[in-house]
Image (cartoon, rainbow, N blue to C red; front, side, top):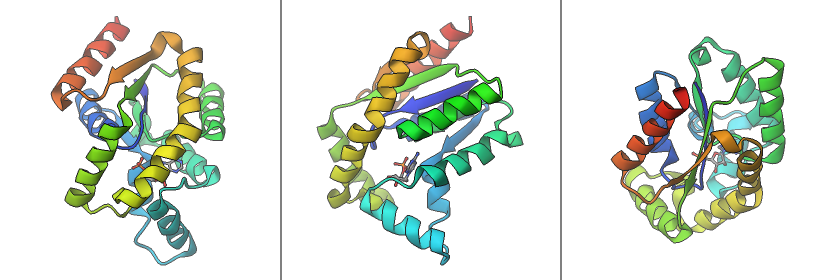
Length: 192
Ligand code: AMP
């Protein structure tokens, strides 16, 4: 099963993707997690990534598309995957769709996590205290949300129009277990 998650930072999609990937025994492919693993080095890429990510801006499409192409070709993805945090821009979306086409792959489900931006702000502030993520402080929240609205929201709209049969909007303000149940129910129905 191949799944894409859309939703603003702090909408809980990472938590849900992790739980769902476990349940379905497929790979949770979080581009944020992959990039964070590269932050500790002292090479040029690591330095650049630290600068971009700590400001809340987006890393270049070139870097992201390369990461995704490598991952999707790997054995880890043979059973399926959940894309969490990708595609985030129109060029990334174009890249992904052409990758699917070239490799004769179908996209099974798209989940769109919808939440009030005020709730998101509160969640991110709380998370910054718990996880001490350098990109979760109040100064960069606005940039991250703005990037979502400017760059990613139009991509989610494109998917809602072009994959309307497989596109499901989820109320992300609900409790974790309720959302998880909803996702699983949708998947079960889609499998029939
Ligand atoms: P996330 O954990 O998904 O919120 O991602 C954390 C940060 O990693 C983002 O604020 C971006 O700087 C970077 N990032 C993650 N995924 C992407 C992507 N698909 N395109 C560009 N930048 C990304």
